[in-house]
Amino acid sequence: MAKQGRPGIPYEKFVVVWEQLLHEGRAGTNMAHDLLGGSKSTIATYRERYEREKSSKEVSIIKSVKLTEAVHRAIAEVKVQEIEALEKINAAFKARMDEYIAMAKEAEEKSAAAVVALHDAKVADDIERLKLERKLAAAQALIEDIEQREQKMAAKCEKLAEQYNLAKQEAAVANKEIEMLRELAKKK
Image 1: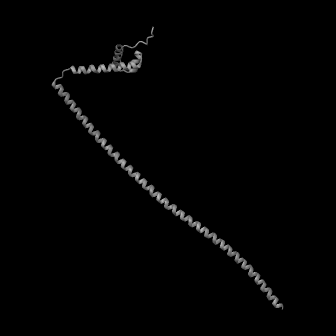
Image 2 (image 1 turned 180 degrees about the vertical axis):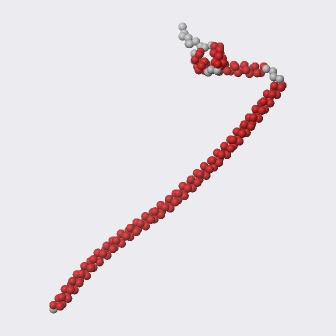
Image 3 (image 1 turned 180 degrees about the horizontal axis):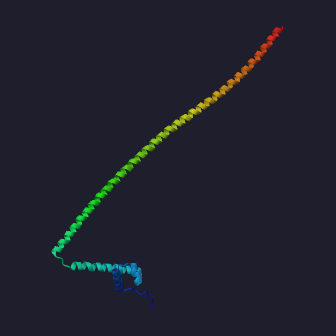
């Protein structure tokens, strides 16, 4: 004997519960499932079927009603008024959209101008930095040159001082020799 699946919920029972929930303002798949049990997919399928059937009944009722010419004219006037109101709303919406687009374009242009200005400022800054770096390099080279000259002059000065001291010593020795020669010449 084959095992049977769980018994399903009859569509007619769903309709009764669903219409009661609609009347109470609590219609929903979860609420119907809570009351009926079964699977939510079955409840959802029944709900779609119910909506389709209800919609087709309403359309057939509307088609079966014969409207008078005056009612048709009144409906047409209402439709014209609706269309005019929608056109006004659409025109106002379009005007607002055009305004927003214009504002967006203006902001985009300002942004582009700011980007260009920023780029120009960066280029000017880079040029100024390069000029300053060149001046700094030239100043450093000049300082190094002056330092080298100062070292050469200091070395030359030191050499001259040594030569001066040596000449002074030689002059002192020569003076002593002259004095000694004079004293020897006086003794003879």
